[in-house]
Length: 445
Ligand SMILES: [Zn+2]
Image 1 (cartoon, rainbow, N blue to C red):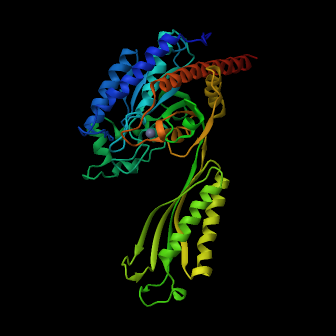
Image 2 (image 1 turned 135 degrees about the vertical axis):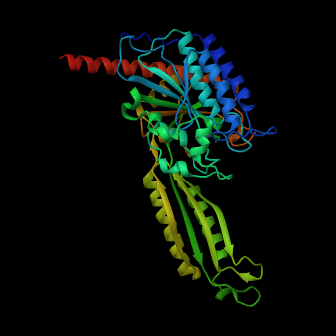
Image 3 (image 1 turned 45 degrees about the vertical axis):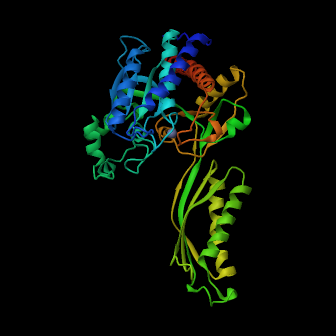
């Protein structure tokens, strides 16, 4: 099959589709568990009605919709099948994001990315562009982890990495994830049917693309509507325990104290300074508890929670060692015994260079200078990257605000993102066709 991939999409098609994305973000925000603000959690009634809404738009765009085993809503576009007689696995390029929200959420986080995926399909269909793969649009069921304290349920299912033992997790009302899914119409007993991994279920996933608001201010500061994610930062989470000696606040002389809370104050500021002085490092103590917790008793024990993030695993590991040394130093300077425990390290996830280049080229062609940036937050793309080449586009968000009702992405930035994603998809199509042609000529010789 010879693909025809017109590289100039009519701007009126893009305009109309971008307007729909903006309006649909408003409409989706009405599907909430609460009347006063937006909350839409995994397998809730609000999610059910949001799916029904999304389904009507997907079907109007000629897509076939299904709810998968783990509660993802997937719209399949079959109009791009290579030939009616072809019966091998479908080559699929997947675009989407999550449609669950935090409590009291904004209307763009996640949902906008799923709607932009649908927008790409609408534009490609209306422009009658022939692609050498199907586009599946995914609305992931759960990314925020609100209901079961466990995120990425949807993408883990699609990537073939969901552990069935997690179906036993309970929500606050004692309902298991398994029962919540069954009641919602999912099928936890047929988990493998959700997988797109390695040609499973007749699907050959050739790539994944997610658009998401940036949740920071780098694009805003640079005056860029969109940017290309280079990697999702690696992360270390750990607990720190500091042990001193309790004593009378009115009698123990200062040069004889072993005050764990004063030591913690120094440590927290030193860790902050490490973050400020190491390029690209985010170093945070987000939680502290002190005991015995009385105003007239010198503190004997402190527990801290540490969060470290960086694009480079080597830089993050070095920072972790530096913090370990800072804690040991407290023994010498303040007589405080300290240790790190329960450290969990997640490596950085680099984005696919070929797909990311398609996004960059599309941004360059639209007249902007492509900006690359690291995502400090985790996203479904991080999980999907284990199953297929993956890329991510960030959209500028006002004042970096997210997880808040004031979250805002300008309509003109949504237009820009849709244009870049559509052009990038056409570039992916060209690359894929060239690869297939090269493979065919090699096998013929
Ligand atoms: Zn999100």
